Image 1 (cartoon, rainbow, N blue to C red):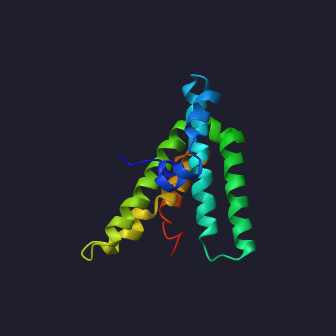
Image 2 (image 1 turned 90 degrees about the vertical axis):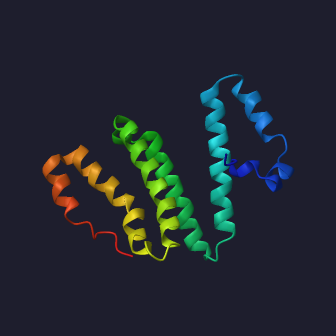
Length: 150
């Protein structure tokens, strides 16, 4: 089973009591614990990606702002709250498809399929159009699948 990012040996050495602290704060409340652990892991992943990138400071700040804006949307946007279950499924699928696309890219016989496999962001866009604007808008947008070109 894949360990959490912050359960890697080098991270545990830096913060050996983190998970115990989360347990203490959660005080038996599993959703609180899961929230703290997921934030801890994600925040460190994102920070390490920024630190290890060769991006200039403006681009790094744009990335942090994108994270801020998306997080606020997830927490506060009424549309997101209304369709949380459907969006969760689409997010999970998009992430799995990204991993699958990266795997397919390594296979010479199938690598031409990698971009289409990874292209789940378009599926999310088309689905949101369907939820918000209805069937006709969803189908029309689906015909324009070249919106996200490499």
